[in-house]
Length: 542
Image (cartoon, rainbow, N blue to C red; front, side, top):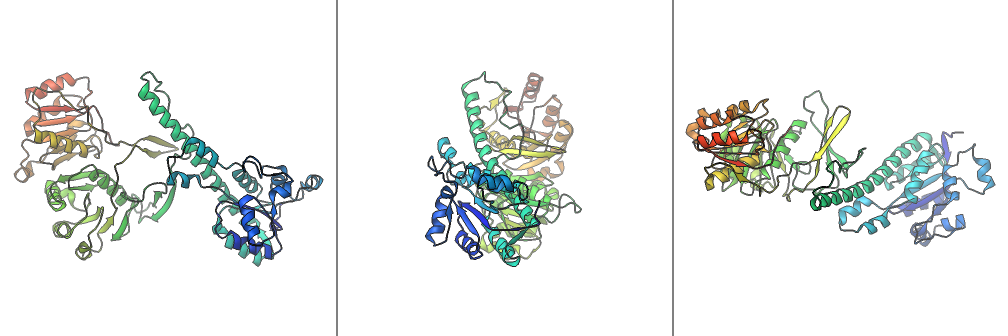
């Protein structure tokens, strides 16, 4: 028989997080509620003078195997799982007392991983709780007859209800506690699963490094995916989604370093952020991270529209703005150095900007930027080199998972033409190659003197992308584009791109290579005296 209100008479307490447990237990005792407890928790309660029955005394069986087995006993689990009015006879037969509330939490596996990732597998195995999650599941399953508490934040509400209702807890409260408990134990299990899945991936990568014949059909991604060591907490609601009629929110990965990213950035001023703002700022920041020298990246509608490197970020900004002032209007600006007053003044006096993000915002910038109160200004902090991670994209009724496209060392660069690139051309080629990684496919980036002079993005064919990227005649006097380089995110399927490049005055092209017509394309480049570099890496971005 389901009890809409449950009288709390007996409580089992076994907690790793002992925050506020003494006050909670003392309040239960004052209401005449009996306490059962385990090991360290029982000792703390007993030392405080609270009457408590140790589990080993209740079960008449000692804790064994250094605490591995202590609550794994039929008197504990039958006491939790017993259904009032249905199992009373069998519980009486075996002298089993009903347990009305279970207060359990266990060692945070994720906290352990955050603190120290060098624990051996044996040490990690020893940290895995068996009886704790089992008791949580049992109590949550039987929420119609038992209350389950997994978080110290719930103590006050529980006590308030018990005191208000003369010792009773409602069915509605028990249900909400059960939902929270199932989530708690699920996240715990998933953290453990993620840890061992990571071990599996590490072993897999070692195997394919040492054995060229290792089966490439093996997947490092689990067949059924719930988490991949990804745990998020909501940071803020967005102003709106991609369009004003769509709701949106920003979540941050609680296991990641809290600096050097848009997710971790602190907004100093400006209008509330929208979904599109976040996407554009993330693209701008991740792009500017690619460069060691002072660099400015301007992004519009998820694509870089202007990028430049110089001796200072102010000079870099001026170069970037000059490369495409029309597209820069209303854009997102990112820097890889602290924003200074001179640069802030240059931006404010020259263009309308939607947002600025930098590792730090110098104090003397605030008065300058605050004159344009609607500009969003974010301080993200400095970053470390990005390591391999996973990326995912939601599709209807599914999820796509892949490795992040982390720029690898270009030790396999191959110059395939008779003419070799000059030192300056090679520098510009690598500059453009870093930028093209962040441009939607089909992507073409043209540049000179570490400054983009044309970007063709998101076209259905590569020729159209090239035509857009090279349509910079109106800026020829400012940019002096003759002798520029061109970067392509993927190989050229035909040599038609070379004809356009030659007419514009492109001297060097960097591209992945890999087309069945590579030899024809190389010969065409030789005919036009264009140097060509193969990277053997593709950078599609969809």
